[in-house]
Every structure is written in C-alpha cells, then in structure tokens.
Amino acid sequence: MSRVIHDFSWPGGFPSHANPETPGAILEGGELGYSLSTAFGAALDHPDLLVTAIVGDGEAETGPLAASWQSNKFLNPVHDGAVLPIVHINKYKISGPTLFGSMSRRELENYFIGLGYDPIIVHAGETGVDPFITMDTSMEYAYLKIREIQSRARNDGIIQTPRWPVILFISKK
Image 1 (cartoon, rainbow, N blue to C red):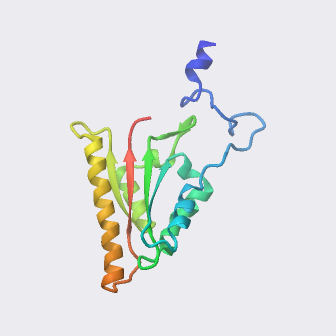
Image 2: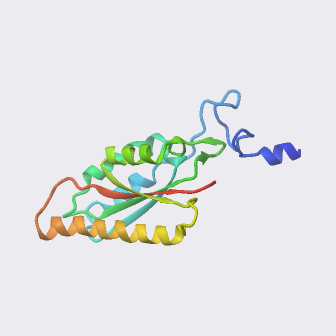
Image 3: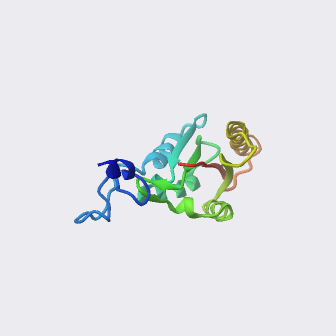
C-alpha cells in the first residue's frame, strides 16, 4: 500500500486518471483546453478589457488549446481588448512529462515567436533570482506592451498584426 501511495500521480508511478497505459483506455481528457479560447472570446468587442489566461503545460497539450494559440490573429487592437496568456511550465502533467517541459528555452521562444507572440520567460529556478520580482517586472512589461500596441493602433492609426506578449513561467513541479 505504501508503494501505491508513494507512486500515485507521480512520473513513472501510477496515474491518477485513466490513460493510455491503463488497459482498455484510449485517452484521458477531462474538460481541459478551453481557457485560452474563452479568454479570446471575452476580449472580442471589449476594447478596455485585458484578460489574463493561466494555462498549465499539460493543458497546453490538448487539441482545443493548441488551436487557441492562433486566436491572437483575430484580435483587432482598435476594437478589441487583449489577452495575456501565462503558461505555467512545470514539466509534468498528471503522471508524465510535457512537451513544453522538454523544450529548451530557445525552442520555447522560437515556438511562441512562430505563433506570433512576444515570449517573456520567467524562470523560478534560477539561482539568485527572486521569481516574484521577475514575474512582477514581466507582468508590467507585458501590460505596457499591450497598451502600446493598442495606443499605436487607436491613436496613431498604425494597424499591423501585433506580436502580443505571452509569459512563460518555468518552475519545478
């Protein structure tokens, strides 16, 4: 019994949900994956709204969320609000590693740049770095970047596809 308790919902241990390793199970999905598309939907036609969506790296692997990353292309900085996604990368989902958790810092940056974002990386495990101060600074930078994009579009008439910020918060499980 102590082995089951110790290894429950732990990498290499026993999963907490039905998954492909469980005989007869095809997948375990739950209702994850809709946070980002809901955030983008809320921001449409609400020019003063800033929606923050916190996404776990396990949730980011679901089909709905993977498709939602493209929604940044639908936000019009003149008429719509903005979405600030924060991806919490702790390298594990339920009982296994995540794709984002297996990527290097450079791969993560390139991935999100390719999706049209301006990635901001906050690494909670760096020695001598206070993650709270780094996160606070990153949130302020992202906010100012969003307001700059909107101001340039609304006041100066500069309308081009913006590179909205995304915060990638990397921590231990």
